[in-house]
Length: 207
Ligand code: URA
Image 1: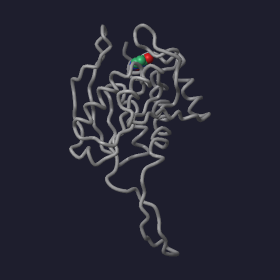
Image 2: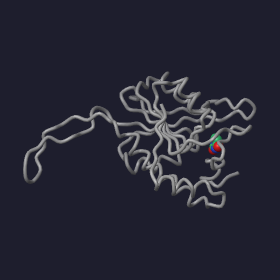
Image 3: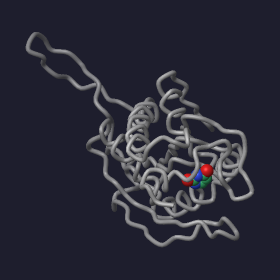
Image 4: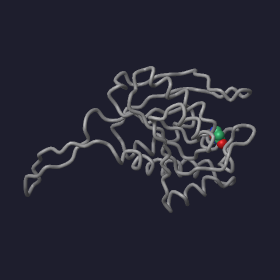
């Protein structure tokens, strides 16, 4: 399932990110700002309990998040650009990292790093990567997280391609996707069109 977060401010910030002449500095800041909004959206349906509390004026029942809290999983390296913004909204979240690179020939995801919290089975696991392109990295990351015990997962990205959404949904129909936009297609190199280019290069100033 794809949940598109439609909001004028997100659309405006994403437009700035897409522009080829936006600086590294601005690109990073905009990604953080949008990620904060995406964190808000993806946690909209967290289960809550009602607990008795006392305010300075009265007793009341008030909501509190149920169970163990969250875990953010960054797909390296571009996923790291979303962490700071998401943590601004979810400061207590645990963090894990998965290192995957795309084989330039096959576009398949190859794992080179995996470090996640030990109690991942008890947490809502939110996997972050700005670009859902072919879906290979996202699918491989979720395969690996499920093998490590994760049972309750969501995927958050900035931009999605229809091809990536279809492949990911087929592989993991239980994992909802939250994205700021759905673009037109992939090009022959697996880049999202019209997209914003290579998210990692743009946020880290590499080529
Ligand atoms: N990864 C990126 O950084 N950009 C794309 O368009 C596709 C994958």
